[in-house]
Length: 265
Image 1: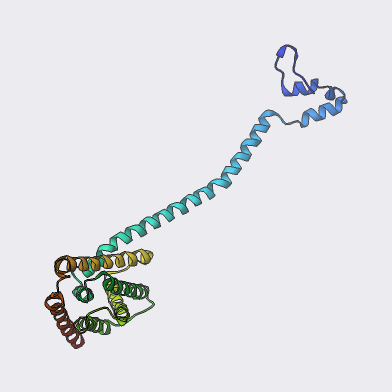
Image 2: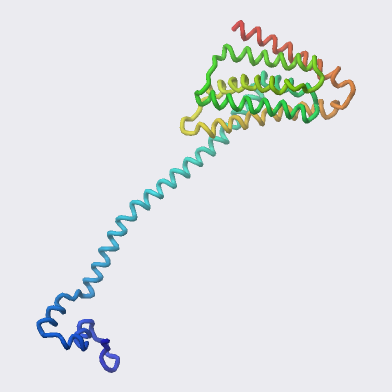
């Protein structure tokens, strides 16, 4: 083992090496060749700096690419969130105040019974059905001409209103019929959404936002009907005779008029 100079005096690395016993045992020519080949401290520093520069040159591009990818992903998520919120009012306005035919259909569901269970069954069937066809039609998997869909939507309004007059409670086939009519209404929703326009880069959030807006509109119609008549008169013995049946007749007549008008073009 080599030691420093006596008294703690600092010596250079090369001087220390020459003072080592192992170095003393070398021949002069071997010692000269060894000292010549030994790298100096500045050379070591230069080598380390070059290696560090090369490592940074390799790492920085990949780090920049990762940052750009993260930024792009974040921007896409933010854009999708904005589209979702922007299309909720579009769906809501299609029900209130623009969707008078859909309003009458939902009221037709309401006037069958003011009890929660029959209404829940019908609204759930209608919501699931129109969500399916709205998504399929908006993405181009299903299409139907409005000249066929619009008269059928009007006919569905007439049907549920007449059934309200004929039956007095929820039947097993009523949710199935409502589901089938919901498929038609979903195609109608998709037609309106297509006219409004769908962004190519944000199709899914736009459809989801529009559908949420439609549901909020439907729930608003039901809540308004309940607060207007159901809450105050739903439990009265004369509710069906004086409110539900006359309202269903008016809805049926309106739907029939629309069928004739839409078929006639």
